[in-house]
Length: 218
Image (cartoon, rainbow, N blue to C red):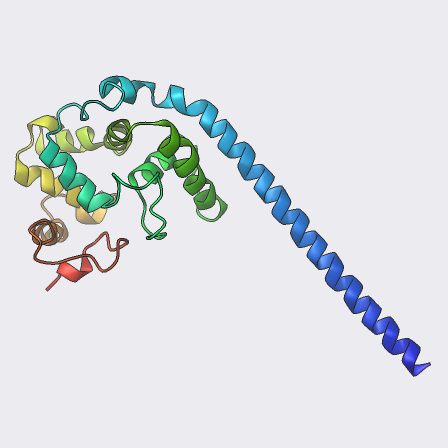
């Protein structure tokens, strides 16, 4: 009797474990299938979403309108240092948000939420935006969807292309947090100081995800 009970308990435990594994496998398969569909839909939509930006940059042959090579390199070095070499996602810095990921968040989501949204954002950046669009078109989209020209007019009363170097750095320093890092605030001035040190090679990032340049604080 005791032996039979032990075998019954062992069978129940094994059955429960198998059921849990089967459920987890099914859930994973469903998630993979769902994300595969999301990527397919994103790839289908990408040419139309980027048509304007590809036209502005002559399909990647030109820089975004109103930007010099120097200013583009400043923007890239601060925002996404490996931009020119990765395929949309910087896998060496998973906590960082690349140019492509930033664009995906604004163009492909009506209401972005972390969690599964971050997974989808990453996959679309890699397999749709990174795979189907030129680098200069990605930059043009990034500048547009993040409202750089609107911010230039708001804070300095002039178009983005007319900002001087100091004003341009102040705009870059606001990042995605104009409330706390707006031009004219002490926080903005401090970040501009860090960016200038970083661009001059005086300090380096503490990893590629160090977007606020904590290592340049001293």
